[in-house]
Amino acid sequence: FNTLNTIAELIDTDPGRAGEMVARLGELLRKSLETDRPLIPLQAELDFVRLYTEIERVRFESWLSVDHDVDRAALDAWVPPMILQPIVENAIKHGISPSKRKGTITIRALRADNRLKLEVQDDGVGVTASNGSKGTGIGLATTRERLSHLFGDQATLAVASDNGNGTRVHLELPFITHPR
Image (tube, rainbow, N blue to C red; front, side):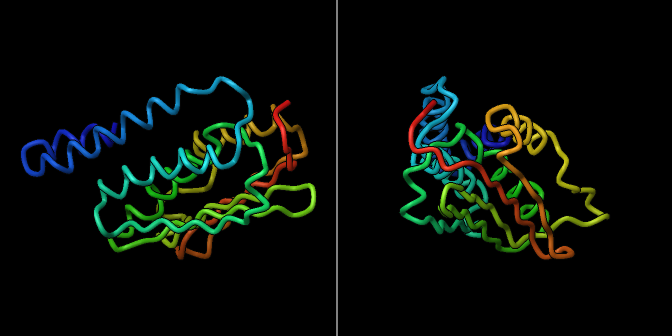
């Protein structure tokens, strides 16, 4: 809905950017409907998140930067679809957006033996008592439930913040090289 509101605002002032956002939103929606499988290749998940962050970068212009630090060995993993998107959305909404300054989100993926470690880190306002962010919102709760349903106690999700200097969400799950 934020994207649609931004598009509506841009139609009169910057039709080119509005058109770009409509095209990317259409591609994002198409990709979100492509799979009904419980697991997809990590590369497909990263491509989906990349589409999402491209839309957000058009929306927030030059003050949102997204970096990817992905171990090539991690790309063989299969993950639940849309497992990273709500975490990245939270990083933008609760970390970068309120900071009122340029911010960076870093998405990491690493294979460690038979484990896949995923991390989304922002350098925004972080979790503080004043902004009410405690890492227990709907997006994170749903992500935890999905991980638990698929992997039981073999998966974890942890949220850490450095006293108002960014937030890091760390997921760890079994390294699966083929769908179940």
